Length: 64
Image (cartoon, rainbow, N blue to C red):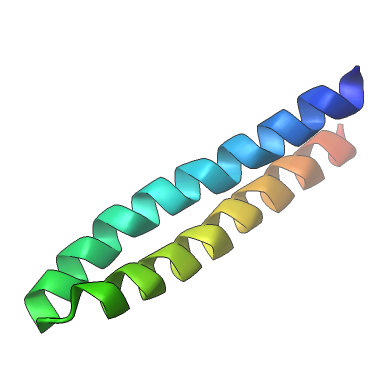
């Protein structure tokens, strides 16, 4: 059961990162005139932020 909760938390962090990345990517893509490229970059950056947030949270749990 605990691994299910950990997987859900991990996907929540990555999902939140993707959601933020889509918003930022849409804004940047619209300003550049290429929404598709902006979304692609935004999603990639969002995944990176989501994974880094998850790793940071995992390291805090390991320190305790």
